[in-house]
Image (tube, rainbow, N blue to C red; front, top):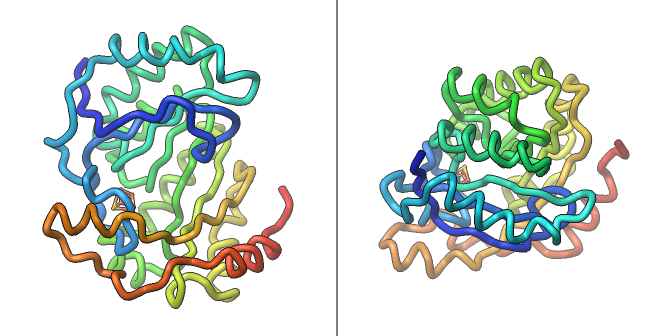
Length: 235
Ligand code: SF4
């Protein structure tokens, strides 16, 4: 099985528990206003890699994973290359490696049904709390995300919810309360993570010749993040 990979990070520490090998897949159906990785959008981009090559590369780092670590597949949207992810996760499970899927939940029924059984942890970015915002600022559907989360309950996947804090867009207490209310029915949610909006991607947009919709929005301050984090429930 051949997949198109944007890049890998051999010893990541922010995409799931412990020390992780992070695989950035090409292709994304969304266009989030705050996207940090516009260079992953094109499904035809990146480098062709086989599951065997990638697994071999990952196994070299397995000694560093420890008890909590493992592999996270992110993107882009990894469900766009679900057949590759299924084969990769199946190969990793044979080596008892923990698997995490970082997703927006926007994938086909077939993709979701195939990937979730091989997924130990789902990292799901709930981007905006209303259908209108989700559609206008990401080009996707909040209902699709909620339906996806229902599927993770059925498959008994642990879930971490992720939410990007963008000044003047998603940095209010009300916004956070709405996100938490949306997640409350899902009994498999183990954690809610707030990620600060950053602007290190500006040069990527310039190189690609794409307008960055939030060019005038400031980065999220450490203080704003700290205040919102203090309001998160304990799981
Ligand atoms: S889902 Fe992720 S990769 Fe896709 S546009 Fe949104 S932030 Fe970017």
